[in-house]
Length: 300
Ligand SMILES: C[S@@+](CC[C@H](N)C(=O)[O-])C[C@H]1O[C@@H](n2cnc3c(N)ncnc32)[C@H](O)[C@@H]1O
Image 1 (cartoon, rainbow, N blue to C red):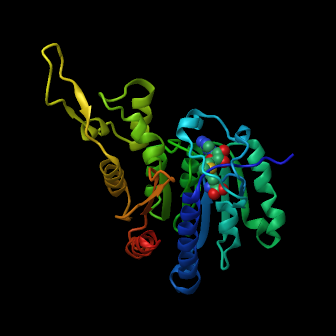
Image 2: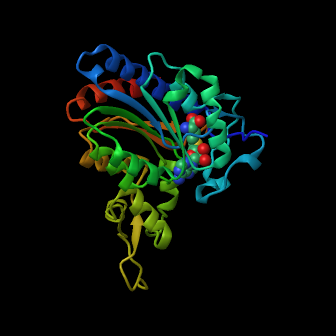
């Protein structure tokens, strides 16, 4: 039996439509511009799924790592639609290489079938079964960035992406990054109202932001202390805007250019569950890349 993949809501259409539009513009530039066409292009999809997404009617197929808690999943109904891997493969002109990274063995087997669906591109497809953070970091280190340029799409369920990985992508000076930042899906919920989280939740936030500065940015001493408060209590001041801006500022420290208008992807209750962010690592290409991305992110 083939593994089905159920996730997302209407915001998933928005997300994939934005990625598709960017990939069209990107491949256009890299095939028509004389200087750009000397590079070999790679599309890397680090949380690749199966290539198809199904309606989440049967929740038994949803994997259950830390952020697969029902509380953290947006369960809006979906029909069978294309996933990001298929969206990328359908584009013409396409990329010189496609790298699909996926942790679940059953999904890897589904991804293999894409080679049959796209026989003309089969030899360009590389499917890697593994952890996105580990695979991306070694891929960044082993690719020749003098001859290659890439678009990376990081589409996790929650807080799986580590800052070290984002930094490795930035260090290539050659990768354009589209990333789903889990704004309301996970981060806002971890930032508990009555004082910052500690232990594994604090570590998780620090690994994702690449700094522990989130504590000072998102909490301040309580203004009204009771007579019984023996130490200074902290209260949350962060809202969605503040958390999103903090993350964009973090990206700006590492990348040559960052889109100023990440797109909130909201569920039917209008809660921004993710922020679709864009950053470009190549100093020469970043102004154009960011201009195109910002234009796409403004579209409805
Ligand atoms: C939101 S889905 C991606 C959907 C996909 N981009 C699409 O449009 O079809 C997240 C995927 O990441 C995979 N995943 C979760 N943690 C991972 C990790 N650490 N490394 C690689 N893949 C992971 C899950 O199995 C799942 O298929």
